[in-house]
Amino acid sequence: MGTTNPMRPYLGTLIGVKDLATDIKLFQVELNDSQACERFIYRPGQFAFLSAFGVGEAPFGLASILSRGSALEFAIAKVGTVTAALHAMEEGSIVGVRGPMGNCFPLEEIKGKNVIVLGGGIGGAPLRPVLHTILDQRDDYGHLTILWAARNPSLLVFTDEYDDWQAAPRTELHLTVDQGDESWTDNVGLITELLEKVAPSSENAVTITCGPPIMIKFVMLTLKKLGFTADQMITTLEAKMKCGIGKCGRCNLGEKFVCVDGPVFTYTEISQFLESFV
Amino acid sequence: MKAATRKDVLAWLTKLMGEYTVIAPTVVEDNVLYRPVASTDEIAFDFTRTDMSPKEHFFLSTQPILSITKGHGEVSLAEPPLEREQVIFGVRPCDARGLKVLDALLLEHEPADAYYAERREKTTLIGLACPEMWPGCFCTSLGGAPDDAEDVDVMLTEAEGGYLVQTVTKKGKNLTDGLVLSKASGKRPQPRLSPESVPVPTQEVWRQHFDDEVWAHLADRCLSCRVCTYVCPTCRCFDVRDYVTQSGVEGSVIERLRAWDSCLSEGYRRIAGGHDPRPTKMQRLRNRFYCKFHYCPQDFGPVACVGCGRCIVACPVSIDIAEMLGDVAKLDKR
Image: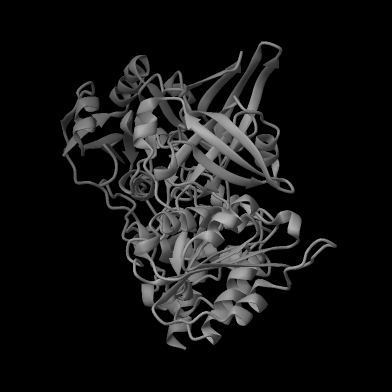
């Protein structure tokens, strides 16, 4: 079976583990086999399975881009058994990596457009590659509006990058939290309220959203109110998966599989699913 | 058409046992199951529908897919191979067709499932035609037939105190080289067909009736027990889990297991954070039926039901897939 077995993970080493937010860490993984590194060509929006051997494996959105370095980065919230096992690991530990899997954000196709990126909580993880791509090729894209939300300030991800994002030309960052704390001076409220306040123009624009299903649903409704068409709304969906290659049957939404047909979909596609993602 | 005496078939099977793992219908407690046999005495020749399909020898109910050794800061992985080639005797045409459905999902839809591919490659199917359609059988409504030889390697049909032998594939030819064959004297007996046929709604009809109340009505009595999934020759949902078999200061040995799962289980679609887009029994039962008759045809080609009737017999609350098809067809005419 060897390399032809898609259920066999590559071995990788954790070369960095950083705290990002409360119970959220950034894991940097270097694949042990140099040939595997060469084969692991991935694009923004794709995901991979990480194994904590002895506990199990789960899929995570890749939070890095290839052009910024060979380490694969994953921002992972501690919510279940596999994520708890990963959180307990230290630098130097060995993990398994299967991937890259799924489709990607149409970043080539949307060149020249204004981009509105909406991230909720850990949903910011797969959006970071979108932001990094646009920031690294700033001239290829129009205005970049980032709407970034979390339940509370301690759950905001990539806070150490906000200065970079804001310093980029034609880029604005808006933050909001459902519930503030004593030191929070920025917006308080749902991302939909922030979206209505910022009210970006739909002209020559696309939106890219990731967050909990309920957030995606209401962001789409708000975007519609602001004049965006379903084709202008791109989102990435989450599902529990066991294989990532369209076999295990876990992630279907009607006849579509989140793992192979997604995770990136336009709202036009989502509206045609027989089953609701919410 | 060739023929072989019962005695010669038994001698042939005995010979095959030296070279292959021979799997055949056997009586296990009150069930007829495909199990490895060491002698033809163990084979239940007089069987109707086995309680489980031979799917379990290609896509195992629990299968180690990776052997993981962890210790001294290192990890090594190994995939357990299938050591010996297999021959399955007494495969019914519907079950062989079920394997073709699994082929479409697991092999032809890339990337191929390596574990299933290996077992499929290393297994030869000796079919046994059904003399009749039994209660619950509706293979003919789905394009199959009780004597359909298309999906096996060798087909045997009971006749003249022995068997008519049809070699279908090259694999089958290789296998029957060891069987004493003579020219058949009589005609091949025709199976007794069920007079009733089950309507299979079109893709369009399925799409139109997703939100119909028929699903809630059917699901009302579903116990989410999942037995229909397990007896099904085409259901292929699986779970993957790590199981620590040895653990000590020197390290640990872990088996990564793949096991049958069912989309009927509560929480099957639940994601981290607790959101579940398919929380009701109605949605889950509907998903199973749609997977078989709408999603699989859309995604992989074949309908994922072969009309074997096992789920009808096994369901503790008499949810009848053939009846359901009739109900959906009726909706279309409403």
